[in-house]
Image 1 (cartoon, one colour):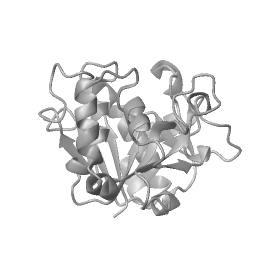
Image 2 (spheres, helix red, strand yellow; image 1 turned 45 degrees about the vertical axis):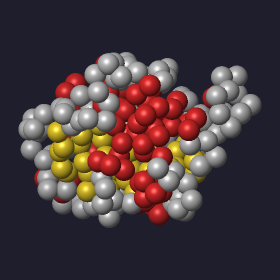
Image 3 (tube, one colour; image 1 turned 180 degrees about the vertical axis):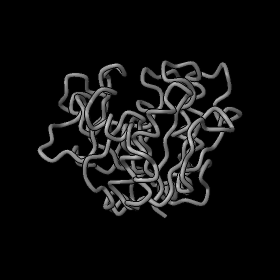
Image 4 (cartoon, helix red, strand yellow; image 1 turned 60 degrees about the vertical axis):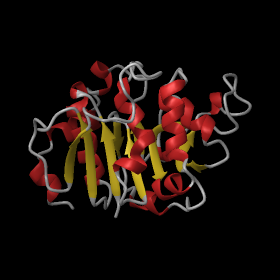
Length: 237
Protein backbone atom coordinates (compact mmCIF):
# COMPACT_ATOMS: atom_id res chain seq x y z
CA UNK A 1 0.00 0.00 0.00
CA UNK A 2 1.21 3.49 -0.83
CA UNK A 3 0.97 5.33 2.47
CA UNK A 4 2.11 8.69 3.83
CA UNK A 5 2.23 10.19 7.31
CA UNK A 6 2.28 13.66 8.86
CA UNK A 7 3.02 14.50 12.49
CA UNK A 8 1.75 17.68 14.06
CA UNK A 9 0.70 19.62 17.11
CA UNK A 10 -2.60 21.51 17.04
CA UNK A 11 -0.93 24.58 15.53
CA UNK A 12 0.00 22.47 12.49
CA UNK A 13 -3.38 20.84 11.81
CA UNK A 14 -4.34 23.16 8.96
CA UNK A 15 -0.91 22.91 7.37
CA UNK A 16 -1.10 19.12 7.40
CA UNK A 17 -4.39 19.22 5.55
CA UNK A 18 -3.22 21.67 2.90
CA UNK A 19 -0.15 19.57 2.18
CA UNK A 20 -2.17 16.36 2.13
CA UNK A 21 -4.55 17.86 -0.42
CA UNK A 22 -1.64 18.62 -2.73
CA UNK A 23 -0.32 15.08 -2.24
CA UNK A 24 -3.69 13.53 -3.10
CA UNK A 25 -3.89 15.54 -6.32
CA UNK A 26 -0.31 14.78 -7.33
CA UNK A 27 0.05 11.08 -6.54
CA UNK A 28 -1.75 7.75 -6.33
CA UNK A 29 -1.25 7.55 -2.57
CA UNK A 30 -3.80 5.19 -1.05
CA UNK A 31 -3.70 6.16 2.63
CA UNK A 32 -2.58 9.23 4.56
CA UNK A 33 -2.16 9.23 8.34
CA UNK A 34 -2.20 12.28 10.62
CA UNK A 35 -0.49 11.68 13.99
CA UNK A 36 -2.18 14.25 16.21
CA UNK A 37 -2.83 15.24 19.82
CA UNK A 38 -6.60 14.72 19.86
CA UNK A 39 -9.23 12.07 19.23
CA UNK A 40 -11.10 14.41 16.92
CA UNK A 41 -9.59 16.36 14.02
CA UNK A 42 -11.33 19.75 13.57
CA UNK A 43 -11.98 19.35 9.82
CA UNK A 44 -13.97 16.74 7.93
CA UNK A 45 -11.63 14.28 6.23
CA UNK A 46 -12.13 11.73 3.44
CA UNK A 47 -11.83 8.03 4.20
CA UNK A 48 -8.31 7.94 2.75
CA UNK A 49 -7.05 10.17 5.60
CA UNK A 50 -6.95 8.60 9.06
CA UNK A 51 -6.06 10.37 12.30
CA UNK A 52 -4.20 8.66 15.15
CA UNK A 53 -4.10 10.22 18.62
CA UNK A 54 -0.50 9.85 19.84
CA UNK A 55 -0.75 12.08 22.92
CA UNK A 56 -0.40 9.00 25.12
CA UNK A 57 2.63 7.64 23.26
CA UNK A 58 5.14 5.72 25.39
CA UNK A 59 8.21 5.79 23.18
CA UNK A 60 9.53 9.17 24.38
CA UNK A 61 8.47 9.91 27.98
CA UNK A 62 8.50 13.40 29.53
CA UNK A 63 11.95 14.22 30.85
CA UNK A 64 13.79 12.17 28.23
CA UNK A 65 16.68 13.83 26.41
CA UNK A 66 14.83 15.29 23.42
CA UNK A 67 11.22 15.33 24.64
CA UNK A 68 11.05 19.11 25.03
CA UNK A 69 13.05 20.02 21.93
CA UNK A 70 11.92 22.96 19.80
CA UNK A 71 9.78 20.68 17.61
CA UNK A 72 8.31 18.74 20.59
CA UNK A 73 8.24 14.99 21.07
CA UNK A 74 5.91 14.68 18.05
CA UNK A 75 8.78 14.80 15.56
CA UNK A 76 10.62 12.09 17.51
CA UNK A 77 7.83 9.69 16.60
CA UNK A 78 9.31 9.39 13.12
CA UNK A 79 11.95 7.16 14.69
CA UNK A 80 9.16 4.92 15.99
CA UNK A 81 7.19 4.59 12.74
CA UNK A 82 8.02 0.87 12.32
CA UNK A 83 6.14 0.22 15.60
CA UNK A 84 3.31 2.66 14.94
CA UNK A 85 2.68 0.98 11.57
CA UNK A 86 3.65 -2.67 12.12
CA UNK A 87 1.80 -3.86 9.02
CA UNK A 88 3.47 -1.48 6.56
CA UNK A 89 6.76 -2.09 4.77
CA UNK A 90 7.21 1.50 3.56
CA UNK A 91 5.78 4.90 4.38
CA UNK A 92 6.42 8.43 3.14
CA UNK A 93 6.97 10.79 6.09
CA UNK A 94 6.37 14.47 5.35
CA UNK A 95 6.81 17.81 7.05
CA UNK A 96 3.66 19.89 7.29
CA UNK A 97 5.21 22.70 5.23
CA UNK A 98 5.60 20.65 2.05
CA UNK A 99 3.58 21.24 -1.12
CA UNK A 100 3.38 18.95 -4.14
CA UNK A 101 3.69 20.41 -7.65
CA UNK A 102 3.96 17.33 -9.88
CA UNK A 103 3.07 13.65 -9.86
CA UNK A 104 5.24 11.82 -7.32
CA UNK A 105 3.66 8.36 -7.57
CA UNK A 106 7.05 6.90 -8.46
CA UNK A 107 8.45 7.80 -5.03
CA UNK A 108 7.17 4.61 -3.37
CA UNK A 109 8.94 2.47 -6.01
CA UNK A 110 12.48 3.61 -5.22
CA UNK A 111 14.98 0.70 -4.86
CA UNK A 112 15.51 1.06 -1.11
CA UNK A 113 15.31 -2.60 -0.05
CA UNK A 114 18.89 -2.39 1.27
CA UNK A 115 18.52 1.09 2.79
CA UNK A 116 16.80 2.41 5.91
CA UNK A 117 15.29 5.37 4.10
CA UNK A 118 15.57 7.70 1.11
CA UNK A 119 15.99 11.45 1.56
CA UNK A 120 17.60 14.40 -0.22
CA UNK A 121 21.11 15.58 0.61
CA UNK A 122 22.00 18.67 2.62
CA UNK A 123 25.35 19.68 1.05
CA UNK A 124 26.54 21.88 3.92
CA UNK A 125 26.24 19.05 6.44
CA UNK A 126 27.56 16.35 4.14
CA UNK A 127 31.20 15.54 3.49
CA UNK A 128 32.89 18.53 1.94
CA UNK A 129 30.42 20.99 3.42
CA UNK A 130 31.42 23.67 5.90
CA UNK A 131 29.07 22.22 8.56
CA UNK A 132 30.20 18.66 7.87
CA UNK A 133 28.32 16.14 10.03
CA UNK A 134 28.10 12.95 7.95
CA UNK A 135 29.27 11.56 4.65
CA UNK A 136 25.71 11.97 3.40
CA UNK A 137 23.49 14.13 5.61
CA UNK A 138 19.82 13.90 4.64
CA UNK A 139 17.10 16.54 4.89
CA UNK A 140 14.18 14.89 6.70
CA UNK A 141 11.29 16.96 5.35
CA UNK A 142 10.52 14.28 2.76
CA UNK A 143 11.55 10.74 3.68
CA UNK A 144 10.59 7.36 2.27
CA UNK A 145 11.08 4.95 5.18
CA UNK A 146 11.89 1.27 4.73
CA UNK A 147 9.99 0.18 7.84
CA UNK A 148 10.59 -3.49 7.14
CA UNK A 149 14.38 -3.18 7.19
CA UNK A 150 14.34 -0.86 10.20
CA UNK A 151 12.38 -3.49 12.13
CA UNK A 152 14.43 -6.46 10.92
CA UNK A 153 17.75 -4.81 11.80
CA UNK A 154 16.62 -3.65 15.24
CA UNK A 155 17.21 -0.03 14.23
CA UNK A 156 14.01 1.24 15.82
CA UNK A 157 14.97 0.17 19.33
CA UNK A 158 18.44 1.68 18.96
CA UNK A 159 17.04 5.00 17.73
CA UNK A 160 14.49 5.21 20.53
CA UNK A 161 17.11 4.47 23.18
CA UNK A 162 19.50 7.01 21.68
CA UNK A 163 16.89 9.76 21.48
CA UNK A 164 15.86 9.12 25.05
CA UNK A 165 19.40 9.41 26.41
CA UNK A 166 21.43 11.72 24.14
CA UNK A 167 20.43 15.31 23.35
CA UNK A 168 20.67 16.31 19.69
CA UNK A 169 20.54 19.79 18.23
CA UNK A 170 18.01 18.79 15.55
CA UNK A 171 16.47 15.88 17.43
CA UNK A 172 15.59 12.91 15.24
CA UNK A 173 17.15 14.36 12.07
CA UNK A 174 20.67 14.48 13.51
CA UNK A 175 20.21 11.20 15.33
CA UNK A 176 18.92 9.27 12.32
CA UNK A 177 21.56 10.68 9.99
CA UNK A 178 24.38 9.67 12.33
CA UNK A 179 23.03 6.23 13.21
CA UNK A 180 21.95 5.38 9.65
CA UNK A 181 25.08 6.62 7.88
CA UNK A 182 25.87 4.43 4.89
CA UNK A 183 22.28 3.17 4.72
CA UNK A 184 20.54 6.25 3.27
CA UNK A 185 19.36 6.16 -0.34
CA UNK A 186 20.12 9.47 -2.13
CA UNK A 187 16.85 11.08 -3.13
CA UNK A 188 16.86 13.70 -5.87
CA UNK A 189 16.49 17.22 -4.54
CA UNK A 190 13.55 17.56 -6.96
CA UNK A 191 11.52 15.88 -4.22
CA UNK A 192 12.57 18.27 -1.45
CA UNK A 193 13.34 21.72 -2.80
CA UNK A 194 14.40 24.01 0.02
CA UNK A 195 17.27 26.24 1.06
CA UNK A 196 19.11 23.29 2.62
CA UNK A 197 19.13 20.96 -0.40
CA UNK A 198 20.83 21.10 -3.77
CA UNK A 199 19.28 23.31 -6.49
CA UNK A 200 16.62 21.75 -8.70
CA UNK A 201 15.53 22.54 -12.26
CA UNK A 202 12.45 20.34 -11.93
CA UNK A 203 10.87 20.83 -8.50
CA UNK A 204 8.23 18.25 -7.61
CA UNK A 205 7.91 19.01 -3.90
CA UNK A 206 8.59 22.35 -2.25
CA UNK A 207 9.62 22.32 1.40
CA UNK A 208 9.27 25.69 3.10
CA UNK A 209 11.87 24.85 5.73
CA UNK A 210 12.97 27.74 7.96
CA UNK A 211 10.47 30.12 6.31
CA UNK A 212 8.08 31.73 8.84
CA UNK A 213 4.48 30.54 8.69
CA UNK A 214 3.18 34.02 8.02
CA UNK A 215 5.24 34.08 4.80
CA UNK A 216 5.00 30.61 3.24
CA UNK A 217 1.29 30.22 3.97
CA UNK A 218 0.66 33.19 1.65
CA UNK A 219 2.32 31.49 -1.31
CA UNK A 220 -0.13 31.04 -4.25
CA UNK A 221 0.30 27.24 -4.35
CA UNK A 222 -0.45 27.02 -0.63
CA UNK A 223 -3.54 29.19 -0.91
CA UNK A 224 -4.70 27.16 -3.90
CA UNK A 225 -4.87 23.98 -1.83
CA UNK A 226 -6.04 25.74 1.29
CA UNK A 227 -9.13 26.91 -0.58
CA UNK A 228 -9.71 23.79 -2.68
CA UNK A 229 -12.79 21.87 -1.43
CA UNK A 230 -12.06 18.32 -0.36
CA UNK A 231 -14.93 17.12 -2.58
CA UNK A 232 -13.08 18.44 -5.62
CA UNK A 233 -9.91 16.68 -4.58
CA UNK A 234 -11.64 13.39 -4.00
CA UNK A 235 -12.91 13.49 -7.59
CA UNK A 236 -9.32 13.52 -8.80
CA UNK A 237 -8.37 10.31 -6.97
